[in-house]
Image (cartoon, rainbow, N blue to C red; front, side, top):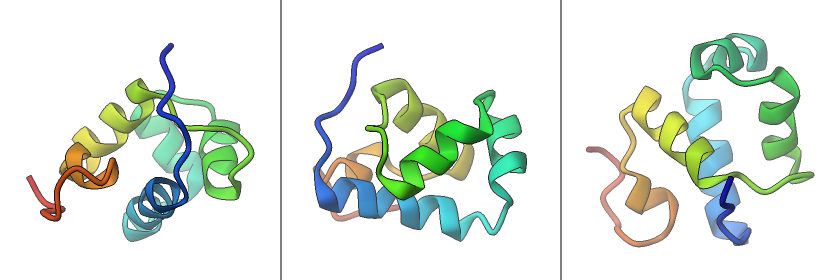
Amino acid sequence: MSRYKTDPIVMRRVRQVIYDTEMSNKRLAQALGLNVNTISSWINGRTEISVEGIRRLCQYTHTNPAWVLRLSERRGL
């Protein structure tokens, strides 16, 4: 799986999207088809988020992936 080089602002936006769901890590992980430890690792900065992870998170939350990656100022799709 390809990974997007961790940028502090990208990871802050990933955390923001996760927090804005107001879902538990477990419930969000289930919705995205991921392990709960993956979500926790993204939040804590222990692992970089993959491009596939960004795609899943953004698709589920209706967030513009270009915003997460700092390529656009528009957050919504």
